[in-house]
Image (cartoon, rainbow, N blue to C red; front, side, top):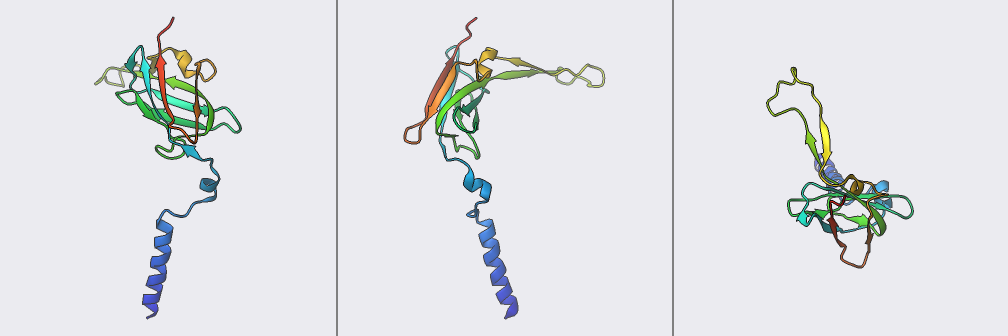
Length: 153
């Protein structure tokens, strides 16, 4: 009988601990987020592989990040996949880089291993202060944004 009682207590304890319903102090204190999606185009075409960063302008800075797919579509994440960004004004930066390194199949003992990142879009878009990009995330609206970037000299 005692073994059965111990088994029941352990089952209840483990069931509660593993259910995911308990929140720690940090999770409870984090700000509320709202879903944010959008599209990034460069010179009129979808920009694949871009990293989009929304940085809140008010209060304690908080960042949300997303990456664009082949259609240029993105979804932001602050704490968990797809949770979006906090409400308010945000400065936006967008980067898209290609990494160059030794040719495929090269003997790395015989070549200088130099990895270089090359920006596929003007670098100003990657600077929160110079990008000219902003967004307002609202708790009561669809937060869908379109960023049309251009290669202006």
